[in-house]
Amino acid sequence: MALSKEVYQNYVNILKEELVPALGCTEPIALAYAAAKARQVLGAEPEKIVAECSGNIVKNVKGVIVPNSGNLIGINAAAIVGALGGDADMALEVLHDVPPEAIKRTKKLVNTDYCEVKLLHTTHTLHIKMHCFKGKDSSMVEIRDLHNNIVCIEKNGKVIQIQQSESDARGKYYGVMTDRSVLNFGDILEFAQQVNIDDVRELISRQIKYNSAISKEGMTGNYGVAIGPTILACNCDSIFTKMKARTAAGSEARMGGCILPVITNSGSGNQGITSSIPLVVFAEEEGIDDDTLYRSLVLSNLMTIYQKAQIGRMSAFCAAVSSATSVAAALTFMRGGTDCQVSMAVQNSLANAAGIVCDGAKVSCAAKIATSLDSGFLAHQLAMQTKQYEADTGIIKKSLDDTIKSVGRMAAEGMRTTDIEILDIMLEEDTGKSFCDD
Image (cartoon, rainbow, N blue to C red):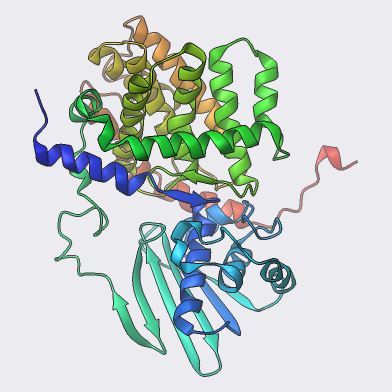
């Protein structure tokens, strides 16, 4: 049964909205973007910056290197380098070409009181208010819900731009995007089977190009604990090992300050890498034709978007699980599995790994991606043997769509307290001593 023209176009639009480029981890980049925009509105280099951030922004910026900052970490670094050297017109690629002088000055200012950080008490998990001051002049840029979603701009206390009201945006995803309620497993699978590849070719080919480049950089560069080569050394003859190694390496490079851009999914570079690289590697190794690869990537990306639409942009639920689950489905599809087997792969994956928590963005996200992919590969292999965990195995339901809603409920509602506790733990002073310190 063919999809209606409206549903078909909605799916194309959703892919266009979500598969966008970003340079570096998207939370510090959102801060840098807000700061660059606030400076642009101010019309001069600020004498003082105040960065108000929601708890999840704090959590996801605390441990990740800001690209083109001279390997600096943290909210101060992201805000200062964005204000001094960012290009506001480049949105999530705001730090693509930071002048050396701006990096040098950021290093001098990052440990001073030039940038004041405040916790923003808000019901929105992704929320930033960036203030810049010079003399009697001030500016404020507010980003909410999406990493590049500017909802309000002020100059000298007067609103000069504000997002449309909620009533005007009724039915929109976060008020600005295509309604995500159109997403469901059956239509996603049918879209992947039917889509005219020319309608998505540019999007998918760019994802392959960008994410493959940072994956290769992670395998050869000096980032984190060199997780990609380490995984590969364990069992280099296994195609699943190669898929896992290349994917984890891309994440490690990204979180380790690599200046190569990635194509994100649902606001996350790690999700974009995880949703794509395993399938790209499998296609390379097995000689899969481009048409099948592109359709598999469409399926994987949309399944990730579908799951994240239930969970929300940020939560205590590790998003690598969602992306790896999507890979399980797409790999089953790529290898000729039936519609039923593709569904089984998703159910099997969520029956296993839907419990990994997010304790902030950092290089060890690469290890969580590797663990999640292990679950996804096992789920795929079980599905290819027509084996599936029964309904009522934990939170698994008969309907795959109901299972995805259950996981979303657990992540968005049930893990709110977990999210708060994780942030409190992360902000505690660490006074212990490691056995390795001797």
